[in-house]
Length: 195
Image 1 (cartoon, rainbow, N blue to C red):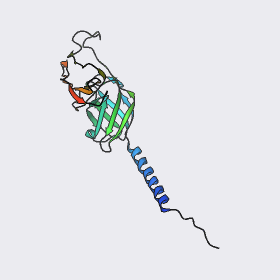
Image 2 (image 1 turned 90 degrees about the horizontal axis):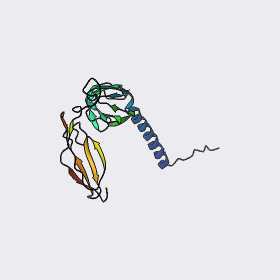
Image 3 (image 1 turned 90 degrees about the vertical axis):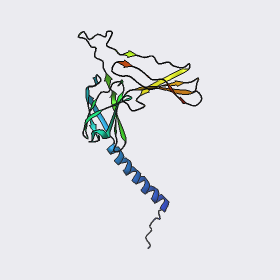
Image 4 (image 1 turned 60 degrees about the horizontal axis):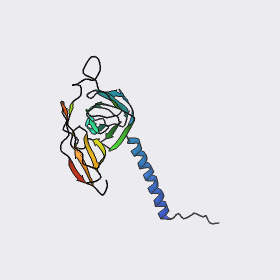
């Protein structure tokens, strides 16, 4: 009596091995992704310290990038499970984003950070002088959707506006300082038909 051994085609065997290795590799990447489990306090003014708790952060502060909405925050201290950052000016009601530069993987907080403003008086009421001066931004005819974010990595949210009639996207650089809110002249980027 002869033993019967099935012949497995090499193409099928190679696909099985590739699939298995891909599965193992993806498991390792998932295990290294940063995770934000919480942050405290959940609301604060610009310049306040925030503690971000989680896992798989980089132990070196400069190897973590943290954004509060569209604005980059300075990282003060770092460990694999805790980051201490400073709330940047211009932060908005959005999720906190952490990127570990060692593996270029990113985590998002489950809830949004709430930026607050503290009036400069004992009654905690807004009055003239509590808000900065602002400069108007001239928009073209056909201006549509807009978005803000730190486009030039200077820590201040810039402005981008779609101009559907001119088929452009206008970018306004944030020139604000301690005393005033200001944007530079627009810089137009050509876009496709009806952006």
